[in-house]
Image 1 (spheres, rainbow, N blue to C red):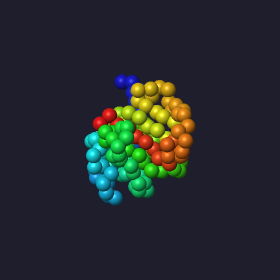
Image 2: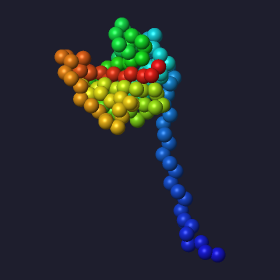
Image 3: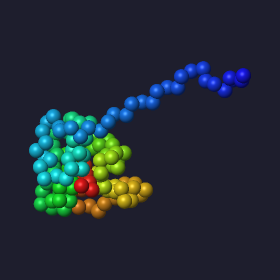
Image 4: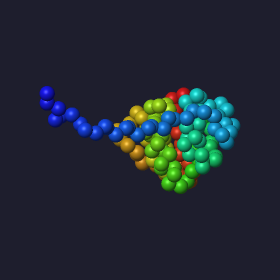
Length: 138
């Protein structure tokens, strides 16, 4: 019997993937009032993974925020890039349809185009330099 094709060592175990938490945030969930479930899930996932983020913006009268479909994650450091990339990686799981960060936009509809430049809206906040904006499908 020929056995030279068999391995003499066990395969390395696959790294464990950290599950995405949708448990209520330890710091509170006031921002979740009026938000759609997918938007709440994004808030909870981000606050579990990035507990150093303390300020979020949720329901307000304009655009997708007015429908409870958007969340602002208030961060102006490079941590915002890490958060935006993590949300891209988990867009399907979390129902993310759009991200805006540092005057660039990424959408699931045009994911193959990557991040696209946006026009100057006149201020750091309007240009999303001080927060990651997330839109969900609800």
